[in-house]
Image (cartoon, rainbow, N blue to C red; front, side):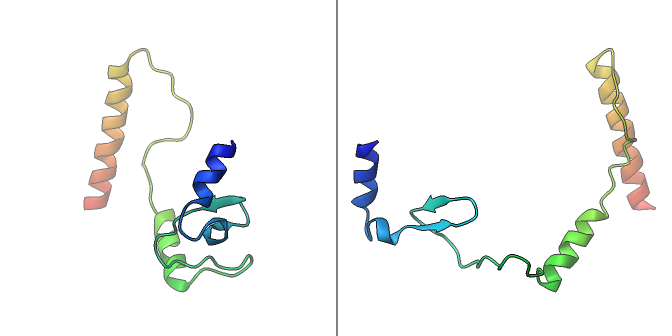
Length: 92
């Protein structure tokens, strides 16, 4: 355990150069990108909300429930049928 700490301390910037996530308690040596974390309670931007709403419109066309099949072929047949039905519904 001591060896690991010494390797981190030898990095440029040392332990003071490390950044972290205060919510998860994680520490990062390198941070890539410029994305900023929003404050808790802030609403996401309108573009993000629109993207989330569009993802909610996705439908699998597979019926809900638990299915028990006797073979993989039988399960694959149903999955293929539902996939084709979804493709046809999108084309219409």
